[in-house]
Image 1 (spheres, each protein chain N blue to C red):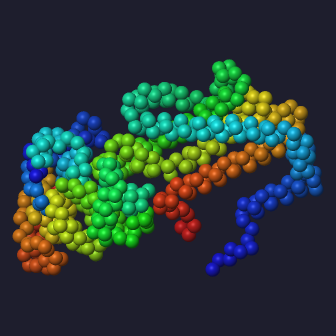
Image 2: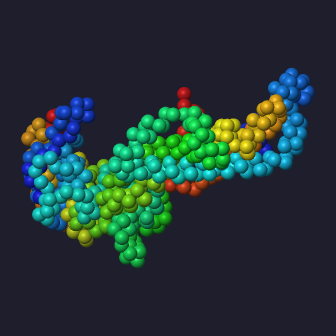
Image 3: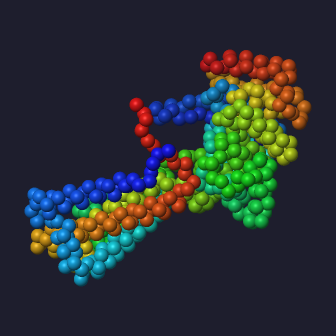
Length: 260
Length: 256
């Protein structure tokens, strides 16, 4: 039997190694400048000094990112499903999608500000658009690549198109979308940062720009770490939901250990 | 009654869009009600294609197929297909799979439960109703598929090498079980296979399909064995003689 007790998990170990290296570099040997890489103590001080508006900034960023992500996810799923469901819809919307999809979402930020003003709306819209693009395409592709036999079996058992979509297409594609949803979730944090750089007067991204103006590296790093935590938490939530929705899959984890 | 009249069908060549490969040519066949007909032939001769056209998945190019005198132009639960591949929905538990057709056709829960439970026990799935297909063996999954189709009470069952992927033991068991069910329900069954023994054991008639290069016609054998049949008839000299005859005929076609 392999001993699993008393072993430090690898992720914790990696974290500890990083922390020790950081402390050594910044506090013991002092090989880097404060502006280049501040020490953990500097970060704690920065966190303390920012305490007043950090909470509202967090809430603002969370609101932008989460509403953008959820809107983008819903609309993207619906678009993908509709494109597969109706040829007429595909023929109408498809060409527009084809034409607009290669445009980098980030490049639209200045335009969005002109079109939608400086409020929270253009930010949410931007995140939603980025997420929608990823999810919409993936949904459509997953449906187009699903085994015909399930559709035929369902149709042959007396199901109509609507029932086929509800009972066969949607359950089948969910496990195939998890990867895309996690990528989209990660991307939505990036989109939020970019959007806030240019638009709003609230939020973590905006605060980051302020810190940068004062060359306050510890402040920037604190915000980066907060973004990290948020992104990890969201990813874990999605992973937990995934496990519940895909209990039926027969997924063996691929490993190349022991193969010469 | 299924009547196939002067049926032609060709597939589009994948590489050259304009070329079509003819696979069924002027085929005629009548399958009577309650008959168990086995369709035998070398691989690629168009057996499965015929089933797909009867099911309504493909359209006849020339000729017609009549189901009780009416031309087939859509998929219907009354002509139920049992596929060679595993078509059981892996995201549904066994029970949900079995009641699927009934639910899709809007049948009340109480009636659904009664029918589903009946067929679950008939095919020997009692005790695994709440498992997911991934937890079942290949033979068990085929049983789920059978129960799912039978629950819908189709008039005609179209079976496309349903036991082709199973091991010999499981296969024989399912063949026996299928016969028992057929004796009880007396459905019309068209059973495609490339297993000669299976065809003789199951069928009232066995139709051997020639590849198109040999004329594409059907050579029909009447199987004289009495019902109910048991696996013991496979040892019967007459059974063996018929088997030999069919092997020789098929060997001739394999060289095409």
